[in-house]
Length: 438
Ligand code: GLU
Ligand code: MG
Image (cartoon, rainbow, N blue to C red):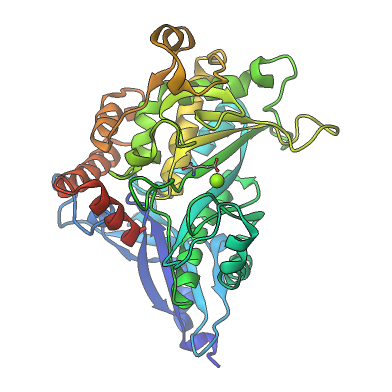
């Protein structure tokens, strides 16, 4: 048995690349480290998915920061089979004077949520729905089938227990459409908690699979012609008393005025948003028509090709306001949950600030609309590549006010280095490369 004093506790940050990086401290010194945090380096934020430091990032080789663990995020999973317990904290990044660092992804989300609360008295309840693929299944079973579930039941059950132990207990687990593909939804939680759990979720799923001699990947595409792994972000607005305020029986799509304005802001900034929510070269193999992902910026009722799907409550009867919510579908797990959600909140806030009306409802596959219909419904294609999305982000003057200039300089340099580094890859090589990392 390992007692706590033998162990190492990790302090981690979900960084701009959507990966989790950090440092370990001896468990025996944890109380002191909880006070002081541990060291961190600004240029770490500019490391892309393939461990290249983005050229032109604003930091270079100088500067010092602190990774400050948030005690509310402690995860401790009992060890077994000779392994010590797995013990870590999610951290905020601070400057040496203790102020939040302007380029901390978690800080970006926190600031956006604080604005939503202060300016509009609104809170946000969020549920992350992740898809991933268990690789190496020799004989894939039919999509959604019980056979597909039974084939992976041992592993999936171990994943579910580890998630429960990590404080990110699943709501639902299902075999998805693709070979070896699974979906796990986490129940709704206050936005920051939901994002924290999404970070933990991905680490736990990959770790448990690896322990069992398997491999789980969240890459948005495993094979160019296959189905994608999406992350759908479910959003519901609450008032200051925590009551849901997304529903209005008389609103278009039964959306309340604030929910409609929020959705309109998200769609207005969708081209910039995807640079943060679908932030990999391979993300754009998924954001194609007819993938149930979304390729056109639009809002639809129960429409799985729309960027935002209005989801109905689970069943008739009861309070219609409970459960009615928005689902953003243009995200994948190459995005940090903090950046993806923080950017969604910022875009929603922009819609609220202008009191934008509800966007037109698109209830068919937008790829089937002709040009005149697209014009009438305000439907436009989303950027078709990471490079185009990054250009749209850099050109969105409102988005550039959502964070400090260094934040954007770092993000754009890091992501552009990722794009440039993969310039020679064909689609198969892209899928393989991202499957290995995410
Ligand atoms: N796999 C689809 C995606 O890439 C989503 C399928 C579903 O509606 O759950 O987003
Ligand atoms: Mg799914």
